[in-house]
Image 1 (cartoon, rainbow, N blue to C red):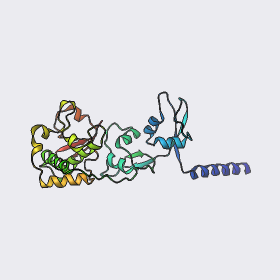
Image 2 (cartoon, rainbow, N blue to C red):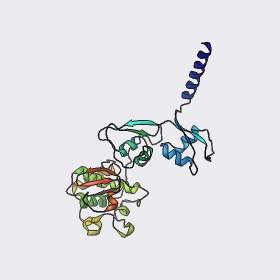
Image 3 (spheres, helix red, strand yellow):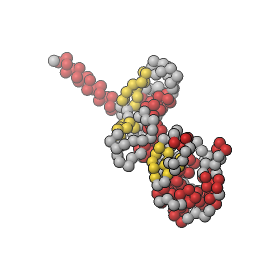
Image 4 (tube, rainbow, N blue to C red):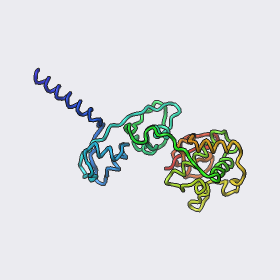
Length: 257
């Protein structure tokens, strides 16, 4: 009996020491050939720095097949009505694609009540506020004119979402990094926005489109982080392979693959 008590006391002491260190370990991972710390961290939705710290690697980033690594603790999140992967990712300081990888999702569709794994709290970007933009008068007018030419007959929220897609592209490494270069982008020999091709981009912006451009620049994000929008009836096969974010007005908003 005394021996059992001593064992239990030692076990409790070990647990207290483990949790007082401030890091909870959720799992272990056995390194496979070809893996790197970066790939493993990405797979489990943790930072490479946290993975290094959890395993006491110091400045060493070399790992070998068969090596067992401790994975820092992760949290879970239960999806609520109105949630999207983009919103959940932003709240947790990560990217929606990282959430998809972490949860083994092939589509960006989620439903209320679904339980998702999310990166452990405490990242530098967790809870970060949306960025605010400072743009030239020319770029502001151009953004408002694109919104007018693409979504003039759509509700205000749709107009804001169209403007947000342009800004999302500016921030993405997949597209040029200015508003003008995104709007006039001609990748693969094709204009990205039809109004540039047919000349409608040159029409003056409507007052509501001006307000929508300002709302998008202020950080409103009804596009849910999308990089594409299109009308669902279009026959472009590429667009229909993209992970869907949401349908809004006449448009479908989608992420990059």
